[in-house]
Amino acid sequence: LLIAHCLPTFPTLRRTMASPPDPKNLYKTAAAVAAGAVALGGVYFLLRKRKRPLCSGDGAVLYPTNNRTNYEKTIFSDEELLLRIREEAIDYAMCNGLVMREKTGSQSFVHAPITLLPAILPRKAFKQATDIAAVFSSLIDKIARHPSYLEDVLVDVSKNDNYTKGLLEILSEVRNQGDRKQNITLGLFRSDYMLQKSLGPDSKFPTPRFLQVENNTIAASFGGLSSRVASLHAHILQRFHKDTLQRFGDASLPKNPAVDNLAEAMAKAVEAYAKAESVDVKEHDLAVMMVVQPGESNAGDQRLLEYSLMSNHNIRMIRATFKEVSKAYEGVNSDGKKLFFHGFHIALVYFRAGYTPKDLP
Image 1 (tube, one colour):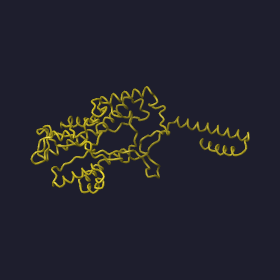
Image 2 (cartoon, rainbow, N blue to C red):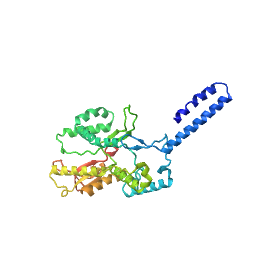
Image 3 (cartoon, one colour):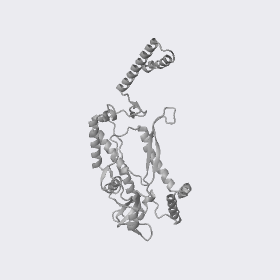
Image 4 (spheres, helix red, strand yellow):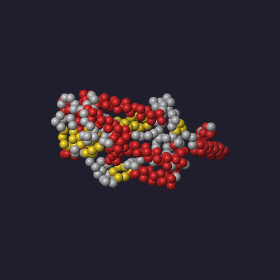
């Protein structure tokens, strides 16, 4: 209602400026503009005063912002509080393995890039993204089991990309050898999404939803660090509960067991290998080999997976670069089915390298 009262001031101004100056008209226009300014100021004040939250339609609360994020009267407007949260977050990260090497090859670690507080996401969209993960993984697995399809799809790419060409040549060579030596495979995948906001009830996106950006099928990282980020955010909300209550309420954050789930999948793969080869996991020193890049800067993320595998399943993980594997591996036995490295019987090879030509010796 207040905004509607402001609108007539603008045509009044245009009519006044188009005609010869008249003191009465100028006075009326100035009064109208002043009244409009006061009205707009009142609307702005009322909106700021109420801080009315907008509901996304499925329970998540999103607070209105201007083109520039407005942090007034939030925890981000309290510099002293913000510095305390920052210090708490960095200390927690450093004490709980949320770290990366300062630079490739360095022995010094710094905390990984993090946000101090969690993002508010629509619950329904979040559930859809988690539910569909298994479907994407199943689809990728089925594609990987059809090499002729992969060759048909990638043949044109290989004409202009020597790396893809080399991979297809390896695939062809393996296929020409006949039956595969092992019929058990494990895929550890990661889907990346961005949240598409609602564009209105009559649009293509009537409600918020996640759209897939890419799917990582090799060297899918950050299972370890993402689990630690979830723990960090839970700690911050608990530690500064009074200060964050207004924005986040008492809602609990979803757990992120990614690192332990990945380790469990590896353990099951090792057990499946042991059963197929009729060997005992402990007696034969079965281990997982993680193929890594030299001086890996993301070693913190990788180590968390290694430690989960060891502490929860008592299975060792051996780290090696492609160069180290080519120099030190002890070969395979006579039937070509078993791989040995540094005295360990390798049941599973986990690639965190090999997705770029420079990784290969």
